[in-house]
Length: 88
Image 1 (cartoon, rainbow, N blue to C red):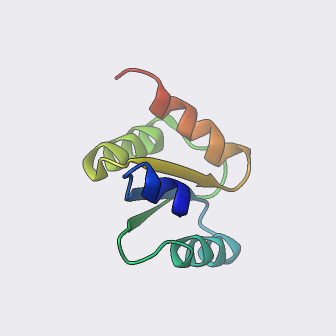
Image 2 (cartoon, helix red, strand yellow):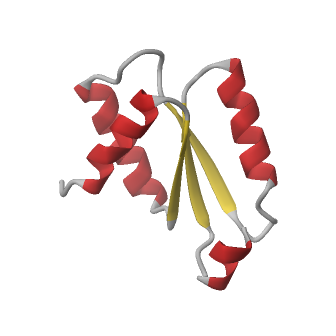
């Protein structure tokens, strides 16, 4: 969290899968930030994300207006975040 504090970034979106393990990963990541940070979890469903799920996640990320996006999980979590980097 210190690097982000120094950069004056405090809105953190943590994108995870939906398993019990992902719940624990989110909890640990959220606890690593101090009270000055606002964290939100965006959990995807199981399996590879379809286009509708990707659009929903992109909308959630836009609405939250995250300064930082952390992806914790396997390839499908990372794949859906690659869409976020694309315009529109």
